Structure formats: structure tokens, C-alpha cells
Length: 352
Ligand SMILES: *[C@@H]1O[C@H](CO)[C@@H](O)[C@H](O)[C@H]1NC(C)=O
Ligand SMILES: *[C@@H]1O[C@H](CO)[C@@H](O)[C@H](O)[C@H]1NC(C)=O
Ligand SMILES: *[C@@H]1O[C@H](CO)[C@@H](O)[C@H](O)[C@H]1NC(C)=O
Image: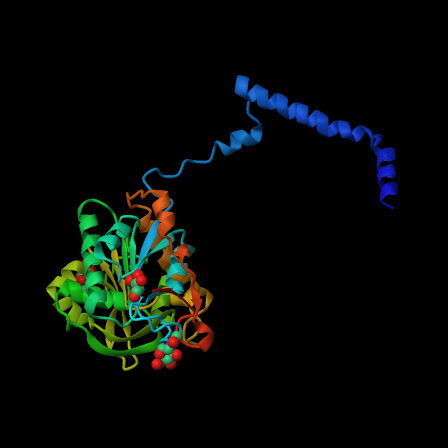
């Protein structure tokens, strides 16, 4: 059958099968000539001319950004994975969130000696504080040290973004207000909520700047974000605190289960620092709680928020040595499947 087909092809086209071997040889000769011609006379194939028409990337931006994520005490799985006393973890959802927007992650392991942590901070282009529950001791001191460094870098003209999520935002609220008792009890454990924009909230230059108008509107009406906290701060208390209101603009508030308003998104007036009482990473990457929104719009929320962090990190002027970055990337660690128990995080990176 196959031979017949070849024979009939030869008959109908007049190209004999044996002659066909000349075609590749001729082609190679031709391509060699073009190559020589190019080398000697600068002749380009049309396809080569097209590729040189790609516009150069913006030289002011850095296209290999790395985000440092601070680890939190424990194993993230209520001791199912390890009870080691110095264990700390990063839920893999934060890592995927960063990766999904075109950046890599270096874990900032909070138990490491401060000088080592600060060295790692010089390998990254922005920082993320995760959620959690630890609000004192070494963990709090590490968050405070890194927060101060973030401000210092920005004060020194180095655009260096920070995302503070849930507990991270609560700790930053305590640090900026210099009041460890500033937070109030709220009922927002395991709850999907809306985001209510404050009057005249700034959109340009904030995390919401690239949200399509339709999605921005839906944040007000649909439960597109996940809350999981029992502490918060009311807008009144936040605005009445001069240290907080001069550092942050309140962009959104949300309502807890008792209809109590609390501050849900803030953006620093003068620094690329954004605080979220909610969890932008969960919509796409966590599955244990059936209340986490996974609609197409909820996923878009996660994507837009991740994109803003990484777009800010690309403005960082830090160009760390690649090998040092590779030596410290989160890929040096293997995540554990912690979600098989049907609760908590789906995957965690544990550092012991
Ligand atoms: C950690 O401690 C708890 C409570 O004692 C125990 O149930 C659990 O098995 C321990 N976890 C590991 C990984 O050993
Ligand atoms: C919002 O802007 C309007 C018009 O400039 C102003 O009258 C109003 O006081 C502002 N509201 C707040 C809360 O700042
Ligand atoms: C945890 O403690 C062990 C020994 O107890 C030590 O080898 C390890 O470096 C510590 N890990 C961290 C992350 O501090």
C-alpha cells in the first residue's frame, strides 16, 4: 500500500523517489550559502528580519523578580507533619500565587540568624507576609525587622514592594500604630465576603488599578474574597489613629458575620506597601474549605492581585547574583501534601 502510494506520487508529479535525495542536499547547500552570505554580506531571511522587529523590553524593569516570603511558626498542619520545636512553614498557595504572576520565591525562614535573613533580603525584589496566628516573640520581631528594612530600602530610592496578608496585615497595623492592642475581635473565620470601596478610594497606582471596571463593581456585590480571621480593626479606629491614617489609605472595608465593619484592604500613601485582611491567594490555590470562592471572577481576583505585586517587584533595582538566587530558591525544598486530612492548607513547605 505505502509503496504503491509512493509510486503513484512519482508518476503524477514526475519526481522520482531516487531523485528526492537531491532535494535535501540542494537545500543544505542553499542554506549554507545563505549562512555565508549573511556572514559576509549581511543578508537576512525575511523571518530573521521579523524577529529583530520585537521591541526591546523596558530596560528600567527587571524581568527575573524574586519575592521573599517569611515562614510562620509550626508545620501548618496542626502537628500532623512535624512537631519539631523550631519548625516553620509557608503554605504553598502563597508560593504558587507569586509564581503565577511571573516571579520566583526565596523563603525567609524566620528562625534563621538575622544577618542571614538580611542577606536573603538582598536577593529579592519584594516581600510577602503570610497569614497565620503568631503575634509575639521571635516571629513578630522578625516581621518588624523586615518591615523596617522594606521602608529603609524605599526611603533609599529602591522601589521594593510588600504585601502583608491577614496576620501579616495585623502585625503591620500593630507596628505602624506602635500599639500591640490596637486590634479588635471580629467574627470572620472561614467566611467569603465582599469588598466595599471607601469614598474616593484611590484605584490608580494601587492593587486595584488593573481590575476591569466590571470586576471592581462585582467586588462590592459578590463574595469574591476569602476571610479567615478573628481579629481586625474598624475603619473608625483606624482613621482615628494618626500613625495609621498617615501611613495607609483605607481602600476597602468588609462586614463580619455580625455586620461589623472592619478594614479589609489598605495601601500606603508613600510606600509600595499593601495590606490585605483577606486572602488573595486562596481563591485559586486552596481547596479545603468549601467556602473559598472558586468562580471565574474569584480566580481573576487572585490573578490581578498577584500581577500587581510582581509588576511592582519588576520596578526594583536589585539585580542579585543568579547563582545565589538559585541556591536559596524555594525549589531547594519539597512541599508536603497536608490537605489530605480535608482541612487546613493543601500543600506546605516546612523548614526544620
Ligand atoms: C505531634 O503531636 C501530636 C500530639 O501529641 C501527635 O498526635 C502527632 O502525631 C505528632 N505528630 C508527629 C508528626 O509526630
Ligand atoms: C470625597 O471627595 C469629595 C469631592 O472632592 C469630597 O467632598 C468628600 O469629602 C470626599 N470624601 C472623603 C471621605 O474624603
Ligand atoms: C532547627 O533545629 C535544628 C537542630 O535542633 C537545626 O539543625 C536546624 O538548623 C534548625 N532549623 C532552623 C530552620 O533553624
